Length: 131
Image (cartoon, rainbow, N blue to C red; front, side, top):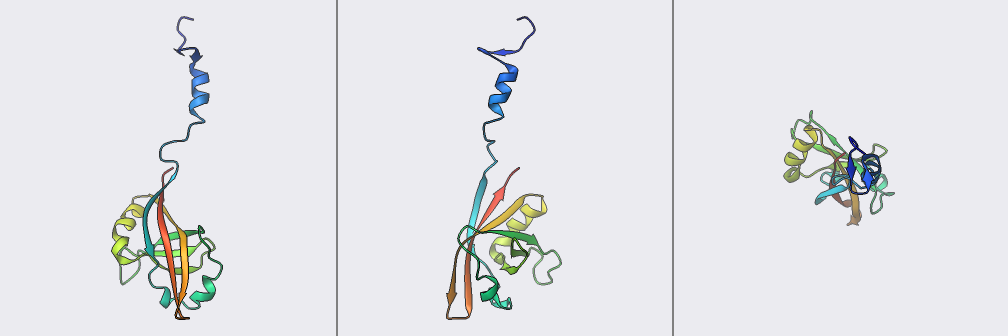
């Protein structure tokens, strides 16, 4: 066995096969923050647009760098591209910097409530996914 890399009773190729089945440390979703979607009152037909949302549904986060009111704006959409609102300004500076640095952020629906028959309250969780 001279010149062969061994680890105890196993050779390197057997060890490599075992390691490939172990999940990587950052393969899972990392929870960052829970928040209410901002700006839902400014979305036309938000009640209809959010009707199908249910707990756990994934949402897309998109940087809106051309937003004239907020350079850190992050738009929240359904996976089919329906705009629901924005990440609140108090959170978007840090999250936008992560996104601008190439990090993959997304959201999940936690709950939604119709308040006073005209205001749709949508609670979400923001997650980071490392690849």
